[in-house]
Image (cartoon, rainbow, N blue to C red; front, side):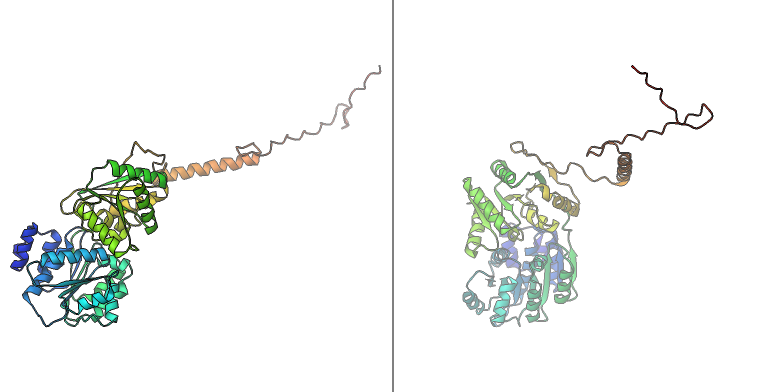
Length: 450
């Protein structure tokens, strides 16, 4: 129960109204440590409740230690505008019965308007690293009074190239702040370097591995011959699967735009979401999906991180994601908070090895499915590479066949490719006649005269 954490009564009241009674594992592990002032490095699956795990301790501290003369007291960094907007919305919900104010600072909005909002000294700034650095360089961002810095989806921020921006912002922050670093994967060397630079004696929490299979998500694979076959399969799935809302993922912006146009020609109401879309259109797409006005969103991986949409129960990978982590972040949009979901990946011949590497990374095999209405011809590799004794035996057979082939060629025997005909052996010279004791050649009998 959240009441066991000794959270402020105003937070407990709003949690009760929102229907949150039992904390998730990551919340149960992180909230007490964060309330005690510890720096944290937390690794937990997408959809496990990480946002509330850092917001509740932060809001509790700001309620318990008000300082109306101070400037901004907390900064929350996120990799994408969508995730930042969602976090801002969560703050507004949890701070309903408090006087805590927060502002959203991301790209795609008027710079001067944002600067004016920052001059009001909001308690919390929620933003992306690039835009916050622009305000820092312009002298609008003062972080001397900061008590908390939160890096959410830190692994994704580094994947997107924000490492230097994050480190620069951290250098401008109050050195005595508390820092909370949350990520969905353990990350690589870059994340370890950032953690070492921004955290002080951190408590590390690894609640679950990103490779753990999501128990509430069914994973399926459908093989496809080509792009046209994939489009036919996609239309069939969207027409026949039972779902409230669906996201179709592509690897590139160009493919997302093209696929959105293909679906619209079949009288299907869809929106497309990727990094080059205008901010107004991106917000409109998500708002309409959340409201149920549209059921299908075509998106790139910009939407794979942090989006929490009620009723999203179908994810279709039109293209196989480039890594196991990206696969998990995509399918993690469904099967959240106790709900079930279905993840379907369309796999062409050139994507089979990538699909197989994802299965190895996740240590599980996906269910292979056939759509009878659009069966296609491709079913995966015909022969798998032999291993162990079978491979050794196969090599011996190949060597023996090669030796036999070479021997046949030397003998001049006609092969399948065609070689010269065998040459007739030379006749031996006639043996000398020795009947008279001398080695004289035998003469043919004379031909009688006519």
